[in-house]
Image (cartoon, rainbow, N blue to C red; front, top):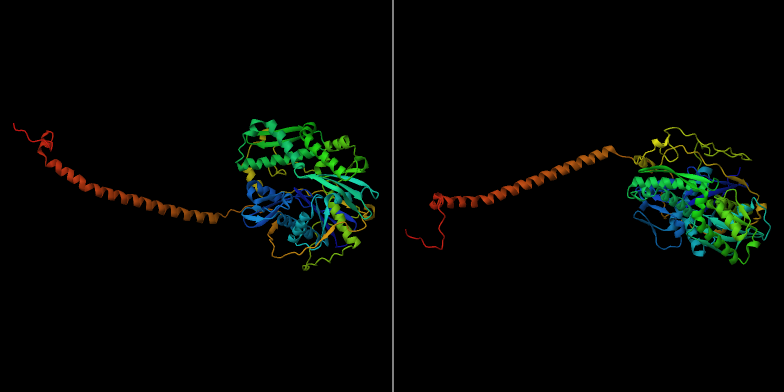
Length: 552
């Protein structure tokens, strides 16, 4: 097997995925703890370590001012983002995430990629794509190409479906935070965007997650509205409810109903939601996306009848309502990728492979790291020529054992109770055995895809070693409490408090002595006056000073 490989990266608004190309095969690289993709989230710790992905999401629950999300949406914004007291541009954040992805793949494969293809929305113009090139410089990449996301998705679709030159695809890309609609034409050398791509930067799968959360809030009623959102334990518990809501949304693409487990103070129950209730809640935003696609087809100068297939990309595009409305409103034939979540990164890997195979722009040989005396084998074994990975069995629940969220799995509903102390355990990275994600590998024939030359646009990069380069980590170390140091600090504090108390007491005693000393002369004078007045001793009232004495 060749050691040279190309890498495709889909730097998404909410999730990031990567796939590599080697010897005619595209394979997704596992980045998350239990999934191929990783959340596009960064968290800056107090020790300047930058957490990536799931660990950043967990830490961001308790310290939201040190977390960065959806920075891809901020590309082109001159206002920097704040991580604590640190000001960082969106492209710098994207560059650090990209650096972590490349480092992760390099560690897995043993050598760095010979070429990296980065995808971007088709609606981005020269200014934003230049910023993406700056992010590649931050990541330390030297051989980079840029590719529109719908072109990458079309390239992957063409690897499974033969397309004639001139065929039109309407790419319906419903991502986690944005929606893009683009018409792509098959050319002699690959694919090209036709017309003006359109999109909605405020429509995505996150809106559908919110629809499920709104359903949960409506069912719980007063118990939901009276939650104390200033309680960190409640905020962390709500984050787990949202994770269950996302899982329920994905389950409704296959099942007719799903449930959302809710464990909150005073509330322990499963909230049931049917596919009909869910589709009613999201019907308007889905209709909005269909209308945007119709406008994109019109902007391309064609009609829906000229489009061969509507290609659905993105995890939320698998919702059955999307296909029904596209067919009902536009009368389009629907094409669904086998891996809609990873279609873009797999297509980017194909573009990276085309760059290496065609030799349009020869990539420099990757630097060969100095081998250790006893090199370790790569962590992932070499797949067989025809991989048929067995399905990963679901682990049987162990009573009292931890589930995927880190909380004990109750045997009955009676055993469920609000335990805020458990939330603090989940803030740190849980050391639990998470089953690895199922592998995604596809054999690719470049001749069938019709890609005969490089389709990504090369970018000239000049990595600057003086750029911000924090330590990156995907796993968060548990917080260490130094008992010895705390006791010493406590003793010092106690001594200082005691000294202050003694000083205050001494000052009060001194002030009291002075007051008594000042009052003593006045008391002596008053007593002497009383002794010298015989009339007062006899019981008669004293004579007035201005009245003359009367004779008897």
